[in-house]
Length: 533
Ligand SMILES: CC(=O)SCCNC(=O)CCNC(=O)[C@H](O)C(C)(C)COP(=O)(O)OP(=O)(O)OC[C@H]1O[C@@H](n2cnc3c(N)ncnc32)[C@H](O)[C@@H]1OP(=O)(O)O
Ligand SMILES: CC(C)C(=O)C(=O)O
Image (cartoon, rainbow, N blue to C red; front, side, top):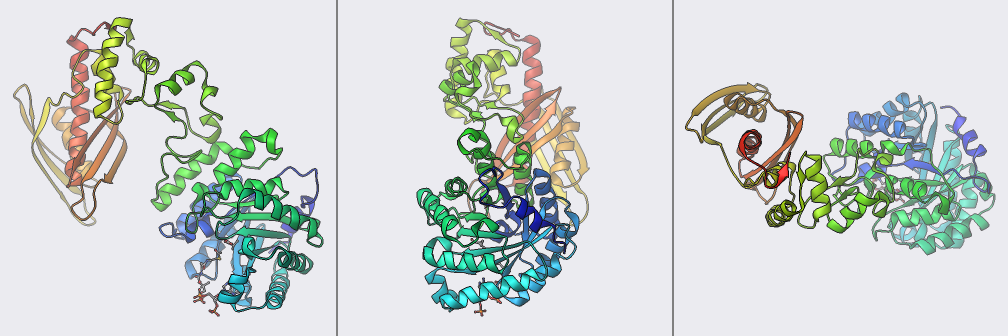
């Protein structure tokens, strides 16, 4: 293991009042992965580690090598692969853990061993069965042992925020004297408030012996929803490393969300006067990658990376946004890697946004027609959650957006075989009296059904989105299939519900085909309702 990282710490060590750089210590692959539902195998961890390095994290905690052979292998592979980020491995204050961590990090370009030991009275008494003195001695012995392998040593006082502040001074002073280059003050159980955090870090920085020789760090959990606020309070008090995770994943309610901390420091730069090395345009893609690797979606209203973070449905906000985007957005979606703001049309939308969308779709609408379309739009929006472009076109053209057909299923049959191809047979009836049957094979029954429908209806479409979600519980749950497809340079959407997810998917696909055909038909012969297209 090389010794470069310690020099990096020295040159940017805490206590230098000119220092304005906050190190981002990412623990998505350690604390994040520890949470139920977020386990990742070695391949997934390597893929995520590469994305995190590209994002620009300073230190990447790759895992806890003593935990399992696969975690050891994951840390080892990440250590061999990464070039710019410091790769960190977690270890208890036990010789075996430290030796294992050191072995896993052996080939890293830049490495760190992260040692932790509980310091709070609760943990000392009930978990470790150690006196204060034993805690200090164990920490010192472990740091000294780890220093034989690596110059960059982080020491975490687990449950620091429920530890006597004077004892923390003793522990951290001893840790720095033994060679720790980063001292981490974790709020392990998400207990502290921002004002207390500010006070605690300030106090520690003032009283810990040789505090300037180490970087102060924090690691906050979100049990009371204050992890990000507490992390920001810590940096305001002089901490220059924050430990955080993508999407805020982690034990229980999670860790502080990396994207929120980074964007708070960027958007409120005049307030904090601090910067990070993160390429913020990669935040959204990195968040998406994590959801793909873990299968755990992000809630819509999640700050920075949620689907609604740059989406507006209410008319008053949309009107403001159309006049000046800063009225309701404090950052640009492009700054976090989202292509654009979306104005979603729904029951809360007003005339300004509706007119803007109709115009974008090529419909210039006079005021009288607008009133009529708006009334029908509101009635439709009360029934549907979201009004799509195809619904708006139907409204603009004076058509019924609830229309069904012209194609209807009379037969649908699919087969699939383990490890083999799948096939689908469909029979469709058209409102003009035609009845057409087609069969197709595909990579799975969904692919086969889509191909058979395309052939039967002579419609080309490229599937761009496919989601099936259970909307009730149990083995007989209703599946809601949502499909998006591209046809004639436009996006089309269809959805359907069934206890059979293949059937729901087939109906959603046929809904798209029907919309495309109705649209072509309406455009060719229906005069617009006071609208010109
Ligand atoms: C706050 C945090 O997030 S800390 C990190 C938590 N992460 C994890 O625990 C994930 C990985 N963990 C594991 O895979 C397992 O717990 C292992 C392999 C590390 C250990 O497994 P086991 O040896 O079976 O022990 P187990 O987990 O049941 O109990 C923990 C032991 O570690 C001891 N211990 C806990 N923390 C520390 C520490 N920081 N330093 C030294 N010993 C510690 C406990 O006192 C207990 O010791 P005991 O076995 O002598 O009673
Ligand atoms: C290992 C430490 C930093 C930790 O995860 C915690 O205290 O939550």
